[in-house]
Length: 122
Image 1 (cartoon, helix red, strand yellow):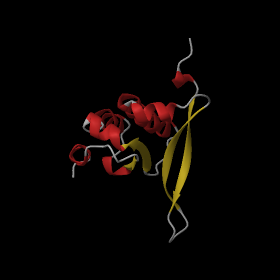
Image 2: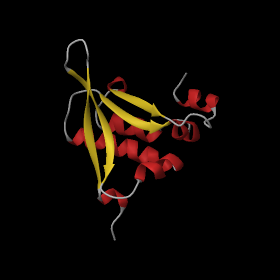
Image 3: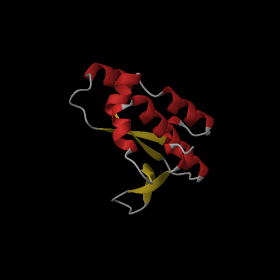
Image 4: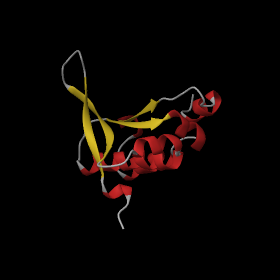
C-alpha cells in the first residue's frame, strides 16, 4: 500500500539577497507527484505540521548550511498553538532556531488573531 509520503518530493527554492545577488537561504516547498496534499494540509493542521517537519528533514539530508525557510499555514499555528515537532526536528538536526524561518501562509481571514500571535510568540 502506498502512502502520500511515498510520492512527496521537496523543491529547494533559492532566496536571493538583492544587494549581493547571493543565495541567502533556501525555501523548501512540498511537491507531491499526485494529489493535492497542500489543499489537504490547509484543512488539516496535523498534516501541515508534518509537512513542515518533513521539509526540514529533507533539507537536512541535503546537508545545506544555508538558513532554511519552511512554509506553514497560519491556521495550523493557531490551531496547534505552535509547532513543537518542528522545534524538536530543528534541535535533532543540530540546527539553531534562528537558522529556520517560518513563512506563515494565508488564508488569515478566519484565523483567531490572538491564537496566531501566541503561537509565534508575539
